Image (cartoon, rainbow, N blue to C red):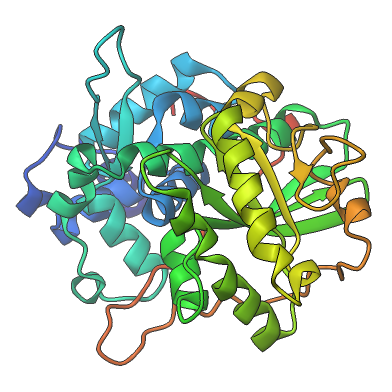
Length: 346
């Protein structure tokens, strides 16, 4: 009888879109926690790491591209304050809904990581504030790059491919900020080979000399760690890519260690046409004779690259004077694409 009443209590109605105060209450969080699936928790952790994703991206990486199932579940997560949402103004047409982490989601993740939610210093207004940030376009470009890779790996289960790392700019800064602050870090596995890279995403809003000025930092990092990590750069269009390649080549011509930093470039147009960064869109800087290459085939262009070393992500640990960080999400969802048997009504 007791067990029956206890289960009934867990299934009691959860208030629709509670206040911030109620969202932070232990009672509300306990009720919500009983309803969350592993997929819900993974999505919350992805938002904690990468700040914002659209409803379309979430459908592709977590719901087998089923927008109906995604929208149904996202509505519940929004109502429970696991996530918040906004819709940017784009002038023509309607932008998809954009989702960010909300108070209940942040507190539940903190408990999962054994952290005191108060020490996490999560602020809802800062999370939803990305809606008005000038960096939203840049952030969405970076996240679209990685979600496209992830979507491709999940959609084609006949190929041996997976994204094995996906780090945000903030996590990269905590690891490498003494030398460089890349827009992201990733690893891709395909057909028994693996490649890692730093990502620089160009929005066309700054002088290319600013991009070139980052190269010594990447070279210094490689020299310090004795690990050569390729740099992938995405430019807004072919003209800007051509100008950037000219400036990069000129810089490297005077650098005695110019071969120590492999660089490949592409454009947002090539990305859209290919549908995935894994396609044959990458043009190596000093090896142009063979044309644009697939992402994994860059390992053949740069044969001196060593296999990416194993690493332990320690950037979630608490440092003196700093708020503790949540652990990073798994780069691939904790399920296989072929086993997406989730009940969308759950």
